[in-house]
Image (tube, rainbow, N blue to C red; front, side):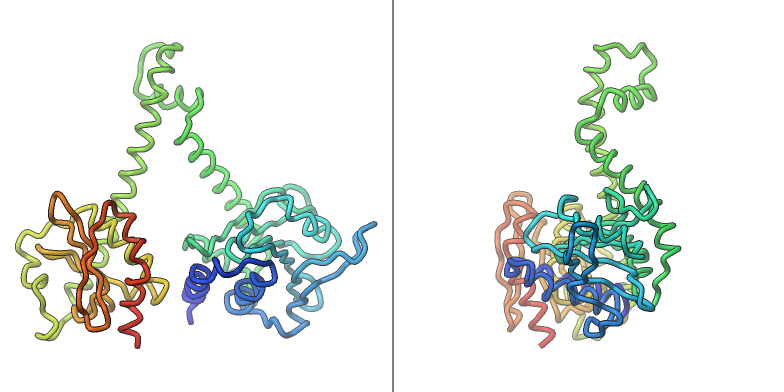
Length: 360
């Protein structure tokens, strides 16, 4: 499998099994060891590559252990400390990593619960682990932009220099994103003044600040909504040309194909619903295999762009009521009324079962 596919497979496993994985040992066995083996590519059964329960005496702390040490040429290259998967990761959990970081040659430390992976290095002071991670990978919601950086930590591509160089950039990008998120949710006086100064040419008095604070909040929220809409429309446009270019047999031609050029309008709600169905179905197959086709009567979500493999249908054209259509093994459709787009998640198992039926 390709590297991103390996991450996707483990991500699907995490989403399925997280609720059943209650202890630290369970998290190690179910998630962390597969991450080390399949994603990073190290042999977990070879002590020359992976040392479990790694021990190094640290000052007065004798016999303390770190869960895993990743080795290369008999030198520690990465340290991994694990916590239970239903627990929140905090910097307090990294005390052993801090101590071991200073007495080994490791430049990379990882704190994980099997779901989230916090990656640390020593940007702030040499041979001293930073207080903040330079990268956070969440297998419950994978940020694909991080995969090229994660690949640099694999056995086949390990490049410490590139990792450390990229770490500083990732650190500042993360800090700026957190700052923007805070300002979008609750803008401080300087942020309000900065933005108001671009559109308001009068003196920025206390009254002006009180006036612009809620305006900045509302504008920020609207801006984010607009960006989401743009991305959804681009996603639709990128999948449509390929779907239209593919030839289909006469048996595959359905009502939506005949009506494609007759004024069909794809709505934002249909695109949002499609993204939800796709997110659910991706626990069973690769995202590239999920496609969509719109028609006058319904919006279809298909496997392999095949009309004979419907995963779900979105009946969103009526103004008053909206329905999700799911399919059994005989392709019989059952409609479920929706109060909101989010209620699609209530039928997640039916969507997954539909995909599994086509996979045999």
